[in-house]
Length: 423
Image 1 (cartoon, rainbow, N blue to C red):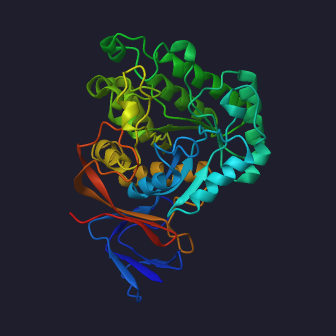
Image 2 (cartoon, rainbow, N blue to C red; image 1 turned 180 degrees about the vertical axis):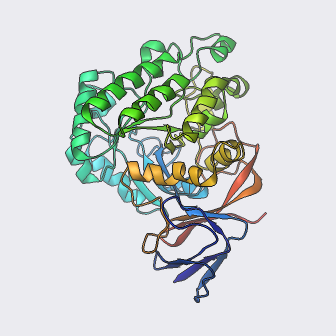
């Protein structure tokens, strides 16, 4: 079957771009050129839209196995497709943890049944206990694309160094949740205006800063490619900036909620804006944006973290941390970063597609003749109201808000994984 995408603006950071049509055959990009008139079985008119490599999210929680009332791999993949994502990397804080080849194989088997490409990280430590390392070689052979204990910091520095050495030897990235519990009285809320509002201890910014300092030092020593996950502090951004002047193996990701919201949202929306690390100050938000704009932070990752309505309805200290993000990420980035004048569309696509694909060694992030036809088509001007999610969960403060920038089509391996409803 042949599909022709016409009249769009191709934004392709590592390839040809501009007013070019794309012809797809048998799941691959067959031709990229202006004014293609080749007969096609299906024609997609992308007039007024941006055509780009399908988005890549290297930080999602699909809660499968163990907590599938929140999300499962099938609904998570559907949510990703609705957000323009053709490749996602699942985190490993499942039940059981992803510390054995059998668990990761079963997750990847389910992923292959979805309409997009679903990858998974393995844990760094057995049971996420921070005491002993998983068999990293075996996990790579089982299909892991990286290692992380996301959700928990690894406090043992010697063990962390050993993990980095092994990851470097395997040429795989290792990602870190940087929150030292010694600095956290109450997780999910910044120590500052938010903690004072609720009369709780909150999470001090040093929880993140101290861990980033340690892990950058270890990465520079070992040469491991590290990913500082969901960075939230201006000091953390500056540590990454300085480290990247010394070496190319230091990487960082930012979430849409951390460059869009501040702790004032935690006060306004309560548990719907509770997350680890927490939303912080306006100065932190602007520092994250600047980090994205100047390339210090290379990746936008959603940290898609579904929870049930019942769980989020609990008290501020009892409710779990995290919000969903796959279906709102593009619009938030489009509004805050592009419309805000901090970056252009090509820079945005690079952060949402090419850069994460490169770090995790995924065949994604580029549209070229012969490549898999993994493509997102979106209208950067279209306004829509957030809600009616494909995810099982709806825990986000953005529900009901008017957003700008709407995914029209998500195409993976040449097949339509998502098509927006009219109206």
